[in-house]
Every structure is written in C-alpha cells, then in structure tokens.
Amino acid sequence: MKEEIIAKTTPLSLVPLATGTAFLILGSRGTNTCPGHPSLPSFLLLAGTLTVGLGILNQICKFVIFYGLSDEKRAPTPQEKNVVWLLTHLQYLLSWSQVIILIVGTVIVAPLATRVHAWNYKDPDHPFYCDYGTVIFAAIFFPSAWFLLLLTLLAYLLIRFCRQPPQ
Image 1: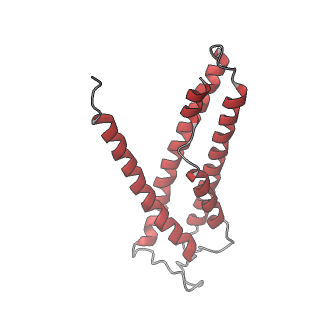
Image 2: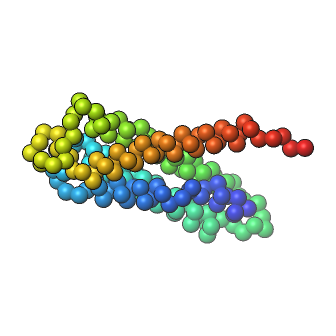
C-alpha cells in the first residue's frame, strides 16, 4: 500500500531542485548585474524560491507518507486518505508551477534574443547591459525545457494512443 502511495507522489527526478538552486544562484549574484533587464534576476529569484520550496515540500510529503501512514495490515483511515489526496495534488501543483515558470521565463528572456532590446554583456554602462552568465543560462535553459516538455508530451501521446489492446 505504501509503495503505491509513494509512487503517486514521487517526483520524476531531482532536476527541479537543481534547477531552482541554479535560478537562486544566478538571480542573487549581486546588485546591478542586469540593469537593462531588471526583471530577469528578480524572476530567477522568484522561480528558484518557488521551485526549491515546492521540491522540499514534496520531500517532506514523502517522509509523512513513509513514517506517518499505518502499516499494510489494515486499510487506511479516512484521515490518511485525505492526507494522501492532498499530497498527490501538491505534486500536480509542482508540475503546473514548473510550466508557468517556463512560460513566464520565456516571455522575459525572449526580448533579449531580439533586436528590440540589444543585449550587451561587455559594457556595464550600456542601457541594456546584462550579466553574461545570467542571460546565457536562461537562454539555454528555457528553449531546452520547451523541447523536453514537447518531447514528453509526444511520448505521452504515443504511449496513450498507440497502446495495443490486451489479448
């Protein structure tokens, strides 16, 4: 019983925690690292805090399930079922927050890749100066995340609709 419940709440990997930590590190590298695009470091701090916070919450939820639920000899009580329901829905919150971070991050990073706001990383006095590492991380992360999201969606659709019926 516990194995089924833990399987429902287990995250896909520790990638969200690592990504959130990278967001926090790059967003907090100092003041005035991106005066031309001040929303980028602020967004990285907010996204990193949300990602790491929900990732830690997920780990706490697994701890509660493993040590807080009854043994396998009896059915879960209604209170335990409510806790499991809450924890599985927190997992959905983590997944949707990652998608929202991806969308908002893309909107923030996209102007840096256009000629509308010419990004400059060499001259700190330039009106659109932004730290090289911050922009390059975001410019690589967000397109890669979109690619992986679309690849995951394609794999899900293939598995869902190309499954052979049991004989």
